[in-house]
Image 1: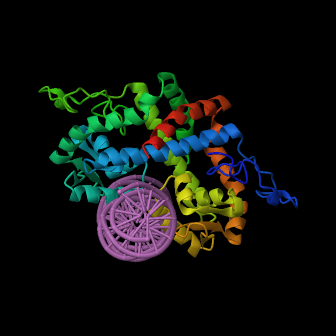
Image 2: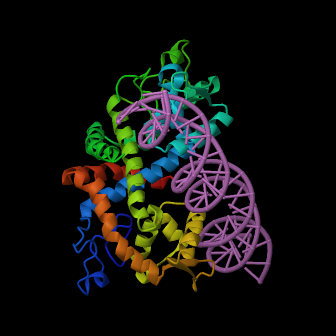
Length: 183
Length: 183
DNA sequence: CAGGAATAGTTGAATCTTCACTCATGTTGA
DNA sequence: TCAACATGAGTGAAGATTCAACTATTCCTG
């Protein structure tokens, strides 16, 4: 945390300023233009986001582990439990959970093996598949949800004010829609 | 995005309110206490954080892929490049990048195979190992950093105001320190 | 309505991460 | 001093994710 670093740059986002060596001979790194390194605030915000996320995900995973679930499992269960008929098309589920179809397919296979979900073929579009919550899956989400919400509160929500939460949402909204527009 | 869900709950954080079935017979889920489900704002903030992170990481990985690097590789390179002698003890590097020693060890092995870093034994404490940037690693970070910073700007930083960035940092700081205190 | 393009989903191999151990060295205190 | 414990790091196997095919439908479009 203290000044032990050669440069004052970010550990993640990149250097704040270019190191001396880089500029000596007037090189122009990106397309002949001087890059706009991150300011101190920019860097701190970016680092805070990354650190918070890593730590948070790790902790939530740890807490869910008690119930034999990962955050990914949990996310699937919640999405299905909130859908009519406790079922979703694979593609919709992949989009909702922001992951590739391939990854989802493997994930559902694992959860199927664990008895949490089942696959059902789709009558309308015979290319399609539904992932459906089983009785066991439904019982699991009912049992686990209160604990998970408690974790999210304890490690995140309850540490912020309502205003801060509003700010967060406002700040991230354009980022999310920008990135979603890139597919 | 539209109302097609059975419950208005979060896809990630858990239900906003317990589904009807859960409450019918007066069950008391967590330790006999009614869980504090997330309010609408709380939920939106939490979902926004998660969505932003997933999308962002995916995009940054995609952008770095051009140079044959992952965000994890990049993070290691930056940390080393900012350390005196372009070197760090394995444990310190693991802490700095918030990952397990085991994972770092594997990661460094891969980067060693790619010629980006080298391992050096530590004279003082002969249990210890340094990860050191190679010439190629140093050249790589110099070449890639400007592009990566540009990505971070384009997809995140430049979409927010300075005030929002300050708010972010302020909001996350206690979360980070809370979670770090849990080891 | 034939044929090509697009869509839905799966698969296996390669890569990466996690988990439980192991090994070697350091530190402590009786 | 030396036994017990702590620390730094690595390992291999198991589990998860990515990547590039591949199959089976369905959608267009002339």
